[in-house]
Image (cartoon, rainbow over all chains, first blue to last red; front, side, top):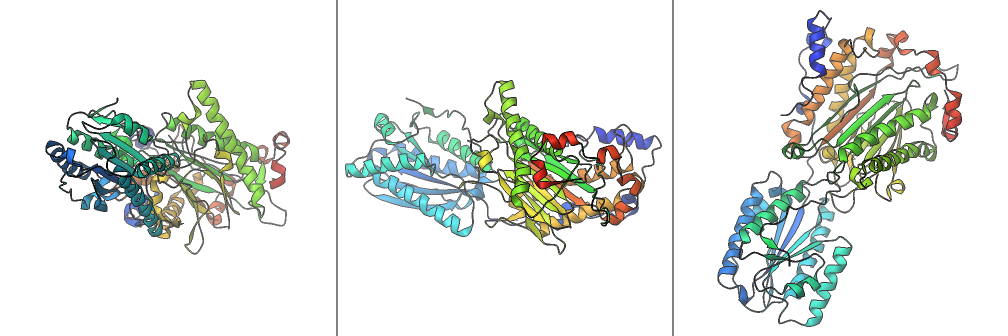
Length: 254
Length: 338
């Protein structure tokens, strides 16, 4: 443990003492008192939570190598979160997959209880509905936090797709996009998009506020390690931190 | 960052009161420490918390704690500047006056607002000098004044100040100000800061209490109600009382800096005990943030009475300077002449 002032004035005092200074203090004549750590009782408040929804495209085009790499990435994510001292108890993960249906694969669970799912790919890309589901879940989670007196960090939605909305009503997509903009403006959520090979980045850029990043090849592992480290940073952040995330090595900005 | 010789108990003065009252000898013992959080240690960042305190000749204790924003590149500079500016400004404006933590909350609020504003201006000036934005020095600030009659606190941002009552109750004088998210708060450099100043007043004679930065608030306040946890604070208050009883009566006054006396030793040990506590496994397993805890207590009058000659202060110090009163006409509304 670092003791930055160990050898400064203290030493001088000890020298003065050694030079015949009357150093007899009352404490020396008394039995040692228990340490403050032993005496003080701490409040057991619930850990603050750092919610993160993984919104994952499992449409047919993800079949084969991409979905395998994504599944592997999810396992890496869980393992890396466990390496942090506070993330396992603070980071809450939810997994929502979308193709022709939107499925809540995993509702919010702390990282230490997160079991990475194995996803399969098929069907179309109901992205608009999926976005609504994710934002609804975030909203409900906050209600739950408030009810139970749990403090929390700004929720993240992290969407990964290899396409663009497909097979659902256009209005649904538009309203999803408007909702992202509104919630970002009001700082209710931070919505990130990562495009895998084949993703319509120009289209996605119009849908969201933050610039979408393109994944280099299938470097899902690198992506999820980065996401985990970002979560470590958020979960340890204190007031006013913008939580700067190092430049992701897995991404290209187009 | 810490105050100069912060571990040294300062001599405090005699408070002039109505002739028919027994003069009270307000003597304060302060034990305070700011330690670097484990996350800052790992990343080799400085401790961005700061504290500073003074005891005025009129017997008032003035103390401040600030927590520089982790996101601000010069957060530790902002925190250090904020505590010294606010304490010195308040000390100057009330020097020689008897501070009354009176029934008029507005008055005490006004008294505390000016130094908050001065501290904010100091941050702007410093930012200009360094050619950076004021937000690069973003910091919270808690400014406290305590007398034998009570405690008044002004606060921007999180952390809090608490008061210990006679029966072992511990009450919050202020509460942490945070936004919806736990990692959001208001800073002294924020545009709305001066409108967001929280004023808290506690009245009572058993003046002891604590100021702490947000690093420790999850360990000592029951959330979400933000109620102080008495079993956390009372052992710390007892600790300060024990230190007070360890002090050598004959040298209760400040030992000269170049000739450390036995009281310096006692106080230095006390501060080290507090630092050890803030770095103990029970604390750091729950928080990786910088931590500041400033404990203060009015030493019992019996103790102070042992060496009245030490407690008495020079007449020129006790006498109120008319220039100062004239410079701070506002002060007269809420402060009586000493």
